[in-house]
Length: 155
Image 1 (cartoon, rainbow, N blue to C red):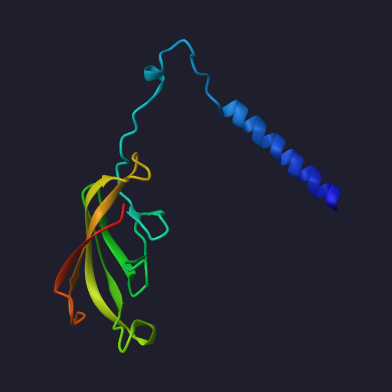
Image 2 (cartoon, rainbow, N blue to C red; image 1 turned 180 degrees about the horizontal axis):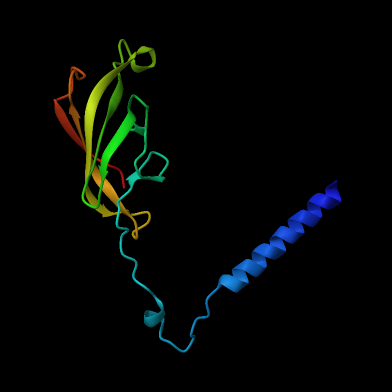
């Protein structure tokens, strides 16, 4: 059994090496370095960067409070995801932290979500990301929140 697994692993490595060698384009070494480099423009559609630094497009859920998880968006239904902004309807689950956050209860608040202010993502400058999120509470809202709140998004 071990010989079969070893043979398979060696074969896969050989295929990967051949594929890499075959797919590597030839570079004209006589050309100046500036001519070989290409400038990457941000992608056409911005992404939403999650707590784990993964780019997301039209996520169904999104954690707003990465540190403690006490506020998150769920059931997101995106009506628009464009170069300048994105819009969705969903639910903001917020912990009331009463008497303290570990003992608190989560409450659901319907919201309209807007993402905007796309800019190059520092981790991957060729990728554009939304840098601001705005929540508009369409019914009830947490006592300490305004009807409409905006937050900068991490980069």
